[in-house]
Length: 90
Image (cartoon, rainbow, N blue to C red; front, side):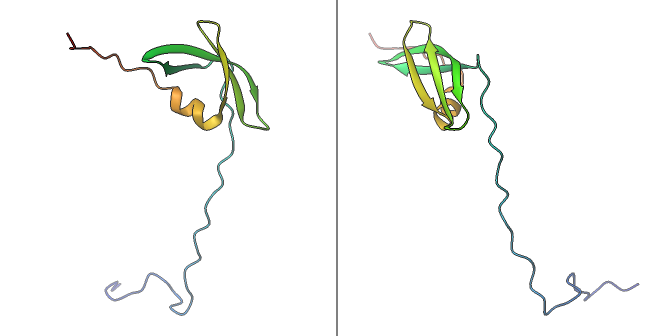
């Protein structure tokens, strides 16, 4: 069978179907998930204590007793563990 010169589209007059983006399903973060956020050059550990899946909001309680509300995107941003830095200032 000679495949040279064959076309991949059996009907050359027919255009390929347009790509339709797949909508990602929203999956809320779990209660108890740990986040790290820096305030005034100090990193604080917090955890998700409440969530509102309809509004995609989370209540974060920090180790020092402070609390705040975060969006789903903010939680993603702050779930990364902090990078330890060493200061060389004298």
